[in-house]
Picture (cartoon, rainbow, N blue to C red):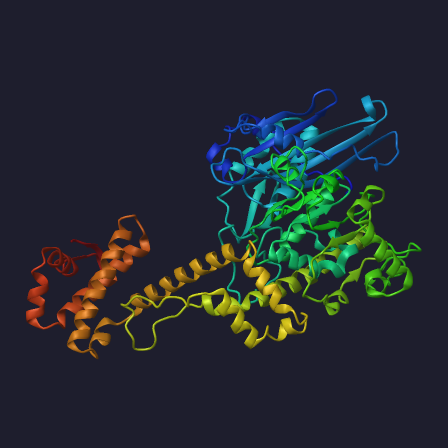
Length: 628
């Protein structure tokens, strides 16, 4: 990645004199803003942090963990061999939060600057500017880093407090919605991803706008990260879907973190419940546990992005290894033998990607021998030469969709055109995998389907329970019905095995429970709305005497429930109480006199009925108070 242009913040002197940001308001967005320096004698050091004590978390070790995660494993030897040069890069990491009592994580977003200068000790230096947050808002924090990073190198550590003041002034995050967040003279326009506990759209519905994020890391450059492995994307989609452990190897933190983010985004709108680390180092507290796994012991479900080839030996039990990226940080392009672009563009003009240029799509004795050699050598072949490849024992069910690949555009030789074409290609790929995941989840729809009261029926009864789910019954029923038209064209005959793996994997139950809870909540809302809209007098006019008594008891039960909610200050519940008190009186008025007398013998009920009649009216007859 080339040097990132900076955006100046106006009014720096005013910012210095401004009041310090509200810690609670700042914490809604970020935990800390840091500058970390690599010291030749002492290693990684936190040079500045705002708030000053943000990394002093209970449990300790957070400052060290963040510091070690904020630098490449070594000074890049791919920098231009000039007397003096600067290389900036953006990457991210995810680490356990030592201050959390449950398994929570912190996301780090890094602006790293490597400066090569033969006049400096060891020929160079490097620093990182880090934003640490509990929220995976990559699209926002990448933009913010492009302001904060260069600003820290221009004006010093005061930039941390300056930017923190702007962030603290932002409104609270609105997950799943677009926001415009002012920062100095600029405004960051972002669409935040849905909240982690948001189950996403119903599985039977394909989102109409694929540009709206329906999962994490919607901004990941999927095409650039996996350009040399496009035909393997469907296998990688399955590995992520069923929660298989995956090791992602890349030459740089920027490339491996982008690839891991792209993998997580592949399965949207499915909630991805597997632990993932965009940039994993040997200093991570979980490394010791993973390194101690005995031979033959099953590797836990994790996705690890690494640049240190030591992991190929220490984590050799991981069954799926994918290597991505190019050793040249200024290019992620894949050129076949002869140095010609993959596309048919000439003179730097864009053209269609030619699938016959991809070796795994075209049979030849040479490609067959290379494939056998690659499999035989395994991932350890990366120790001598980096190459883009996938090593896996997993047998995929889904076939690559060549109609999707044929729509992809190659940008030719122009980096500017290639960047714009990458946006188009990402849209094509993201739309396809969003559709693929949605269709895969569609068979679970009947277990998540809500109901509303039928015409003329009473909403003053408990809504029916959602259908019970049993995995064996689901699989048997699915085997009889088939996978549906969309999937049947894209999956092999063993498609049912993919559903079995998904049901047994770590992603299914957390997603299904969230979808189930959301469906139950939506059903309660629909029935509550039906009770607000019902004409109680019209409803009871067609009832028998016994049904009217049951309706009175049901209205009373729901009224008491709403009264409990209204005590907590819910505006909806206060309005619902007004409606239900009127309904209670209407239901009471059609009961036989002897039944009315019997009901009034209960003092609490008598007060409730009396309160439903004593209404103080304001202007225009609007109820402003109801006594009980």
